[in-house]
Length: 80
Length: 80
Image (cartoon, rainbow over all chains, first blue to last red; front, side, top):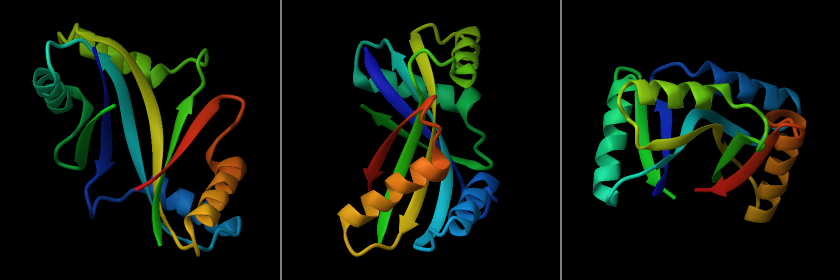
């Protein structure tokens, strides 16, 4: 049993409205020290696999098939 | 300059439709080995602060004022 986090972010150059709006709101609230905000989605999942490598392979497949759009997204897989 | 990630998740017992829908879709695609999916939002920000402690304090304040709703959210602050 593995707990895995898939972090999905936007590629550089792809607009990130949620990050931009959060940045703007923080500034309006007086948090002038923030110089950038990027927004990411995380899917934290529990997965049954015989070993780490095969878990990794399956999670990569999930990314390809459902979780990410390779045109605009970058992703990162982290084992907890 | 610090890079900080604020991970915002839902408290146990609060329904997580994005996690539930992702879980269902993964099952339909044949990923039967996934036993749970939780969805989290991450704000990755660059913040200017004299030291780590004061950065932490400011980010906690951002969470209270904008990023989280303490009734339904849990949050975690990670320095990268």
